[in-house]
Image (cartoon, rainbow, N blue to C red; front, side, top):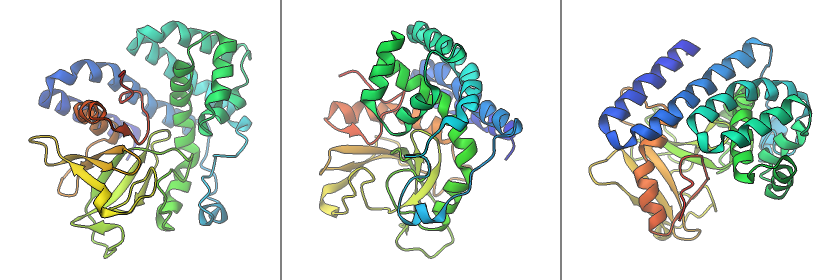
Length: 304
């Protein structure tokens, strides 16, 4: 699928969700331009010569994400190019953090921040390192993590595409991303003609969608990607009223939930990012009931 087709699918599913749930109009107005720019930026980086890395089958066999401990300095220019496109869109969508975004962009342009260390801090989930960088820049740590993570996403998507493909073919089987090590923001149930009882049950394979780089990989149908729990008595599903295709997968062992979209019977699978926004009302209910999301995202990080 080329960029124009991806953008058209994004527009179609955004407008479909807007029609189905008018209360999400403000959220869609904020995030749809950002999702579109992420697609455009990934395409621009690939066109400029950024290319997918080799999957490194030995790392995958040892269940090691490709970039979680890798030096990322070679991607500093791609990260800067991405930030130049993504941060202005973020500033328009989220004016409350526009000053922090301005400071970050200035620091990146003037080499006042170590781009490699910033990228590595994001990928490794090093909150202490990110907090130190945020303090030195005079910005909020959460804003820095969010902005750097979104600017890094098109870079990781571009260089990690073959890793995600190889991980799926090689039965990665982990709850964390084979590309960057992040946990999923969404699960998607898909139909398949393959006879794979481990991954396919009751009509659908379970695919996880990375919260950081948007990679997708197959995972067990009845297991918690956060803690690995497989005890059926501690795993539950909750469906929002009137939404048979939507559910939250709950784990009573770690008190986490994963928003899930059942596309196994759909003729046209929804865009994952838009599907996640469509499940936002369920996020509100689940967090109100004391569950935390498997992965924190820009839209499910709700104030208590």
